[in-house]
Amino acid sequence: MKIIVTGGAGYIGSHTVVELVASGYEPIVLDNFSNTDVRNINGINKITAKNIKFYNIDCTDSNAVKSVFEKEKDILGLIHFAAFKSVEESVRLPEKYFKNNIGSLEVILDHMQNNNVNNIIFSSSCTVYGSPEKLPVTENSPFKRAESPYGETKQKCEDILNRSSLKSVSLRYFNPIGSHSSGLIGDFSSDKPANLVPIICEVASGKREKLIVNGNDYNTVDGSCVRDYIHVVDLAKSHIAALNYLLKNKKKDVFNVGTGKGLSVLETIKVFESANNMKLNYSIGPRRDGDIDEIYSDNQKVISELKWQAKISTESAMIDAWNWELNKIK
Image 1: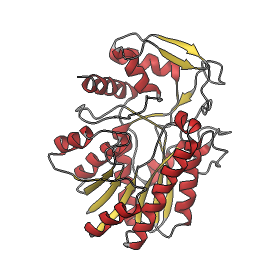
Image 2 (image 1 turned 120 degrees about the horizontal axis):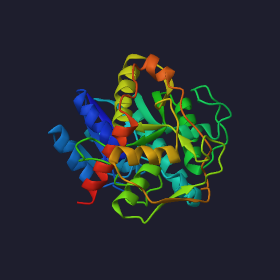
Image 3 (image 1 turned 60 degrees about the vertical axis):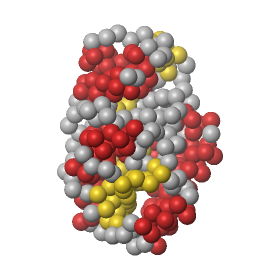
């Protein structure tokens, strides 16, 4: 049961490849290491005790993608992760995001259709909801104006999938954190971390002098931004549930993937400090472009229809995140 995984050497992709193997699938990874490292492939192989098939290609390169489909027969479906992911960078470099995130999906869909591969799981994002008027957000919450070019690319990609003839499931992630308990795979992003928990870990390890909390005047419980944090292993498992669902149902669908609970930045710092028995150096700074006050998921649909639910605690995620940081700097 071959499943192509674009961006399978990345943070969420590598964890999903591990879960695919555990579930009896045969993942085929496509990645060009533009924002990750070959060590994740090595880590996958160690965790699964297999040599995962891997192609070092750019998913915007149509000829390279075509060659994979020509070599690999009997492909059951595809999980599409390959995309740039920094909200902050997308504000500075919007064309980079439009070209890569939308362009790669268009190339992938073209070759899927040409080779009669009809099932795709798409890595979407809660950023498609923009700044929501009502919380928690459900799958029926309207798309607002995206607060960043990154969010806009996810909106446009979902629109492309809706117009496609292929069966699809779009998983609208909230905020993935943590790492595999082995410490062998994780976030190797080459850009400077812009997400909260990786920044916290860099402050804890001394890579950064302090953490700047971007704003304390938002309309939230303590003035700092509120997000729905989900362990990346739980998130990876949602892709297996979505794939099994898609293979049984000839339809298009979307699901929020989150815990259904929001934590503020300041609350998240306290959880990390408590879980790892340390104190962090942080101060309040200016707001960051592209951030919204608050967002967290209504996850009842994914629980009901995919029979999936987040199980790993935020505390455990913080321990795993710190363990990954320590392994990464060895």
